[in-house]
Length: 173
Image (cartoon, rainbow, N blue to C red; front, side, top):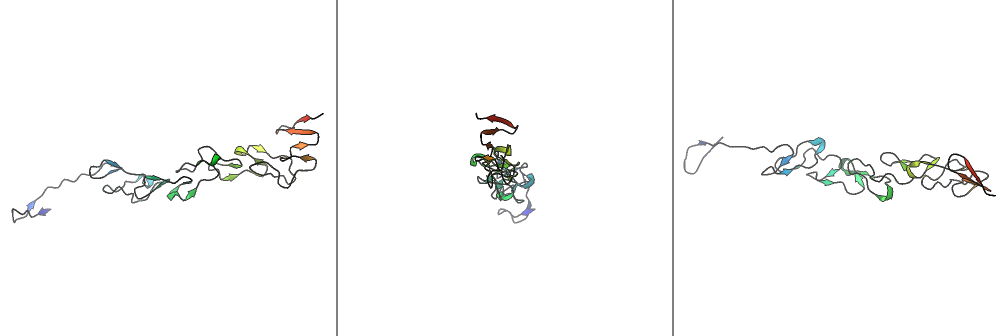
């Protein structure tokens, strides 16, 4: 490369020394850290922008903003589902930090309890429901109790309470 200097009219060689930043750094002195670029690709060494987009759970041109509360995943388009205590989920994975709300199950708390189950982690069994199913959160029977049973969860018989899932009977005398 040749440049003309004001003191001379003839071209003279000029030595340019270019310095590249270490991977995942950018800026004039290479002292700034790149954000969370897609598939850990390098950011622009001058601007810090992620030209390939952001990794899951991150936003912005430099991919330094975590998804807003209640969202996760690619471009933060996925909504957290049914986390316990209205807590949020991890902005990258979508997993609820405090587990699932009552009536929900699965890694992402997106699976409703099966028809005969309810409550925390779907571990409670419905009572003697007329239709065989109960509310997935409270355990109250859909359509009422089977003949001979009563109570909100249809686990009580006139004069007898059915306790737990093991079939123990407590007689009220």
